Length: 121
Image (cartoon, rainbow, N blue to C red; front, side, top):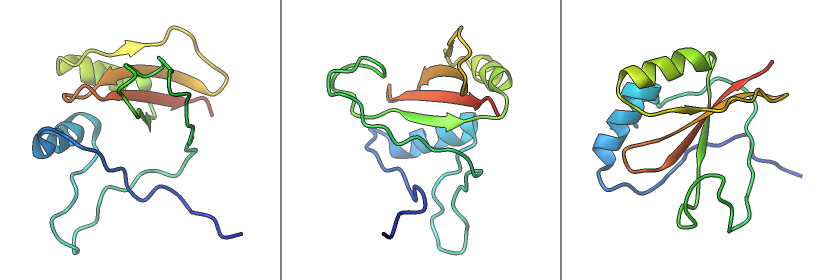
């Protein structure tokens, strides 16, 4: 069976796409989509990707109207949290360390949920 090799893009709606793209680039290092084919788009480091549908009534990542949450792998959760908080962004770090690592939650300017994950390996 032929299988996909990874996620090639993540597309979502925004009230102000340009400003939101700048926010992701400034605070999380996710480069904006190039406006030409000569420039390379953002490239992520190889690593685990969890693709997990949740029950419709989950409260794990927000209100019932929220259909998705993105999880970004980070090398140093404490450093990332410190950087975000210094920029005035509220971050909630989970107290528990799990077998697969540590987690923190925040929201982007459009109120979309973001989870940060520092893998334990």
